[in-house]
Length: 229
Image 1 (cartoon, rainbow, N blue to C red):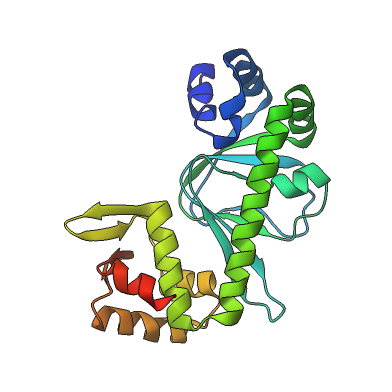
Image 2: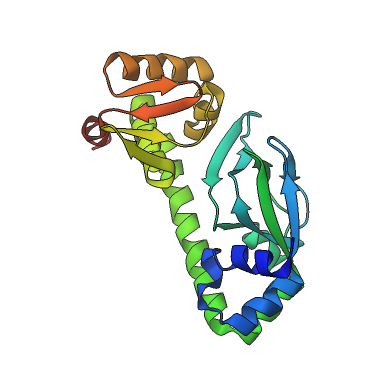
């Protein structure tokens, strides 16, 4: 990839909106581009946080194993987002796993380079702290949903979140532009696959959603919103 192409992608990473052209050129020299195929592991639980990862293309799944050995998906990240930042800043071992949900292109930045950038550009550190705080809040809210809400409520909340992050309105419906299997949905809401399949069938029969291959289409956003109130 040429320097100009790399710079074009870096400018679309939300974290670096505070940096000027010269700083972005310096950043481009410090980063490494890497492609991952769908389902390829980017890092595993237990690996030290040596890099921060910047997503340029595709979707990345962040997950962890529960105490009973099941996978729980914490986030589906879209282009422009950063991940691995908590482990990189603290130099800690990762408790999560990152996997390519689709073919992805990622920019990798060494931990030492990130720390150096934040020292030279305090606004970068402030912006990263806000991103970390927001992500923690999102995860805490998801954990609350898993504890206090029923499967239909969790499912409604998930579809509304997916609408916000990956939705495309067309012909009075909203297509979730990310392929999801029933197993993917189960891991996202912390429920058994059979239970999720039953709930999805009820949503279809009620006219709330429909499917097209591995894609979901939302037909009744208002009822989904009412379900979680």
